[in-house]
Length: 368
Image (tube, rainbow, N blue to C red):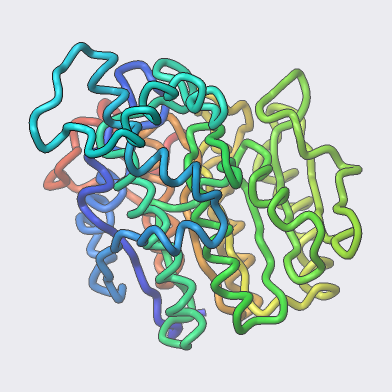
């Protein structure tokens, strides 16, 4: 698959956001990934684009106006209030309508599944974080549509749990759904493939009733593992019946077993559905030693999913997602960026890398 232009979307600001101290989601992993891509000289083979902020109208193509309005205007004000800060003049509420809205904020937090110390807290810059994640994925889809790239990469995307008007599983806006909707303007069929340790419930739910999008999810399942959906008999409804494919997995699955299953399923899916494009969510929580996941894949084993999907020769988008042992997530996504340009990275992490100390005491790219 060498010779296909590979577009890479990144914005240095996305790695600076901070949920809260003990929250497992660390946006810093995007900065670490980008640093490894630079350190291994992979960026020289990429068409590099700066992720832009999606505008409000783009977010409203999927999300409910009241929900987006809440994220845009009130979350950070709630954060400031909860920490006892007074508003400065430019932070002051501008209208009686806004004042009433803020008074009602606790009700809205519950309605939109937001909370300050749980899975989906409000934090400074949250709306901008959502805009950058979605802007990168929307623009990646447009590049693929125009034929300006054969593969497009946005590690800041892949936030697959977000619902139309609800935050869920560390996700607030669903960049994947927005990217698929962009593709459906021109493509008759789009395949969404998810290898995150958690079921891709937000994307499946969005397209559960259509035959133009097939969703395929390989995920850990059982023992009340989040989000609790994705059973093998969840197959879609109406026109979308049999266009949702779920592969629930037990803990501890290794590279060989996973790949035997993955390649068998995907050969059938590609032959029967014949998608115009593929969006591949590459959550890094399905590799070994993740803080939350309990699968047993190596970096190379996870990367086999990328290799396999590249063989079909259709426009391909690679997105991030979960992954909570951040130094391993950065290793993984740097390796998979290399695969996209035809290189298999190995060996030691260069000492010049900005985050070199984070990979100690074993500075190899691939962990044992």
